[in-house]
Image 1 (cartoon, rainbow, N blue to C red):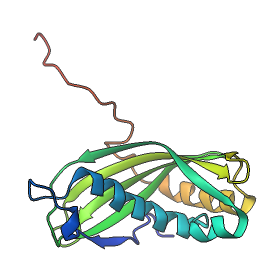
Image 2 (image 1 turned 180 degrees about the horizontal axis):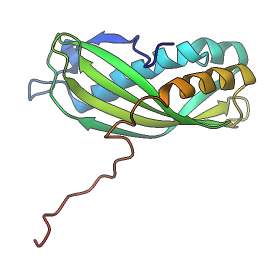
Image 3 (image 1 turned 135 degrees about the vertical axis):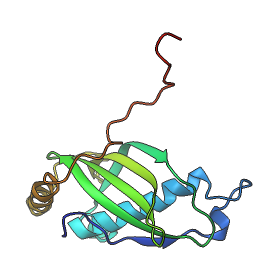
Image 4 (image 1 turned 45 degrees about the vertical axis):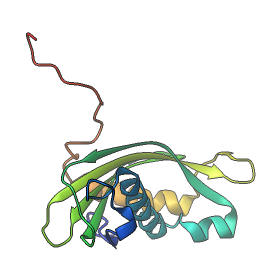
Amino acid sequence: MPVLFDEHREVVQPEWIDYNGHMNVAFYFLAFDHATDAFYDAIGCGEHYKAEGNFSTFTLEGHITYDQEVLEGDPLRFTTQLLDFDEKRLHYFHVMYHAEKGFAAATNELIAMHVDMDQRRSAPFPPEILAKLADIKERHETLPRPDKAGRIIGIRRKSGA
């Protein structure tokens, strides 16, 4: 895997457009979920993984920032950075770019849990996936932490106001 995972591409679909004429917030979640699927396939815990061993991942928490609107037909490119992991959890960060104009349109930070689907409870990742994650994290630690990672939502007040 290159320094950043940069494999997922998508185009803003007509049905994703809201009455403001841009991509509706619900479809940012969908597009980022598709980027997650591509990342999971690359590390070995995608859809085939569930079918073969009845293990999967569940998202525990997610945050999206909306930085610049995208419109119908806009091509999108997604990067993924692994921020951290342990034996049962992943913490990663996606950036959605306009694939032609190059601007960052949105970000998505997620924490996911590895799950034994027979018990529907958390379970450790198998050693081969932990080894892949360790390799990716080692390379991703050379990258700066995304500015928008770990943000807290709230209304910022001007000092003295």
